[in-house]
Amino acid sequence: RAFLGWSPAALVLTSRFHSAGTEKMIAEADIPVVETWDYQPEREPLQIGFSHYEVGVTAARYLHGKGYRRIAFVQNSAPGDFSALERRDGYSATLIELGMQPWVFAPDADRAPFEAGKQAMQALMSAAIPPDAIIFANDNLAAGGLLAGQRAGLEIPKDCAVLGFGDYPFAEMLLPSLSTIKPPAL
Image (tube, rainbow, N blue to C red):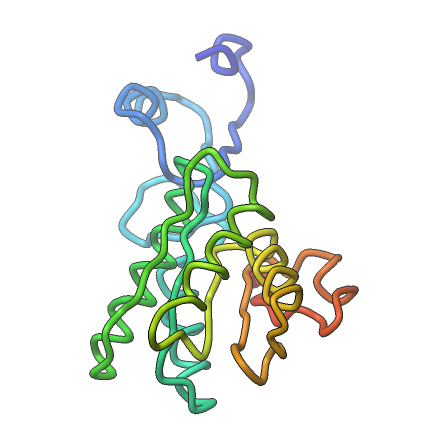
């Protein structure tokens, strides 16, 4: 509302997740609207992005293709990350299609990302039959998980593969470097 009040020539929004009121304003705005960080072909605004659902599909298929069969997914601890939930949904649907059971861990919402990754790694690896691979919703969570796993004596990726999302600059600085999915540049 505030931005439209300035009478801009165009409006660029991050993502497609908006309140009903914002959707109405976008539909009624008499200016070009561009949404980034997402792609849903059925949506009306011009979009520059990618399908987060397909990221989840790609991650699950990649790990399955590498021979992993107990693949878990760790959701973001930050509430409102709907894109990460779409990645989770793509992962879940793919595992079901492959005849496997999805295994989703939701960290406590009040935890910072590194701490949430640590919580996830500790909880998942203490299962009677732990995962052999974990997909984290983002690289911050994955880094927390990787570091917690190392501190617990795990050999990453021998004992458990760790896959993040975002291709954050610190990913290559970790030892071992963090395997991560780079968001496509369109």
